[in-house]
Image (cartoon, rainbow, N blue to C red; front, side, top):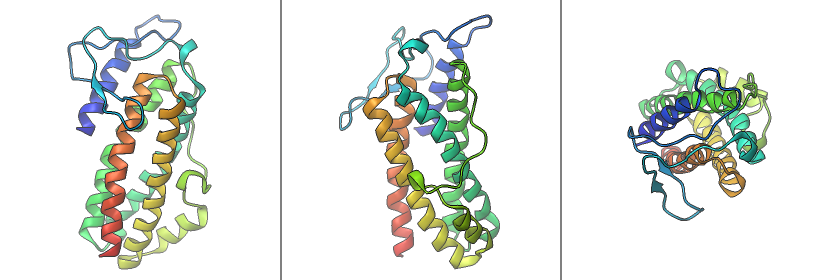
Length: 208
């Protein structure tokens, strides 16, 4: 389901980027993959109908949309840095499988967010900062993760990634509260749903 949502977002985003366009234009749902639009917090989403406007003109994009897109790119990049360590360092095959799933989900999301920012004429943020905001691991924590091996790596990876996911859920919740762009809202809702499920799994793995 998550891949289908990302594919749909990418398709409608590309549809808005016509050659020679000087400014972002509204994105309209077509007859391709279904696009699930998030409702208000606590409410079910709806499926967009062909011809329904999904994205917004640049003048209608809220600061929360841009803030979320720029922040989540760096947030995801650190998650990918963490998952990239798991194959050679983790002992538990479940941890390795979880890391692979996170990589598969978050790498395309970076592309979607970057494409959206480019469509607005904004630069894609480079790298990420080693801060503790929104669950980000500090430089010292990342260095500890790089030197850990086996069961010690598994415990530290799960501990850091649970906090990291919780931060992403907070970021997505802020976007859903104040954001306007339907494409970004769709991705934010998908992050809330998917990462809350993974938080539950990681807590169970850590407890077990």
